[in-house]
Image (tube, rainbow, N blue to C red):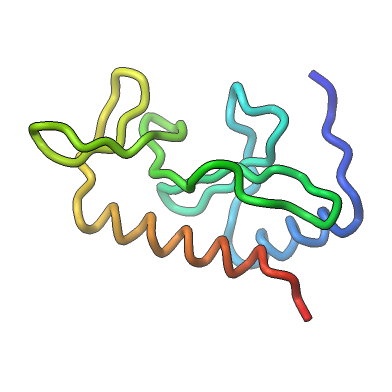
Amino acid sequence: MVAMELTSQQIGILERLRSSGFEIVAFPMYENYVGVRKGQCGALLAPTPSGFTLYGEPSYLVAGGLSARLIQSDGHWFVRKKDKLEATPERTAELESFAAELVSALLPVV
């Protein structure tokens, strides 16, 4: 695996995320992206020349990994491989709060 080279601007953004309570992590199979998590939620950040952009959607963590949100005949679920968690109002609210906080933290500081 090749180490990702980050610019000083990108490092500054990651430090700002960390000071806001986000944890910088690596998600297996996504080594070209920077992983962030807080609580039971996570997201992937794609490096750009000016910083980072969100890659895909933030997700609820299931069995320690990123999940997909699915609607099935028996309800709403966060699913990862063979594991699934019910998308309860509390979990959905945690994910929405995480996503809003992450987007806000990624905005340029003026």
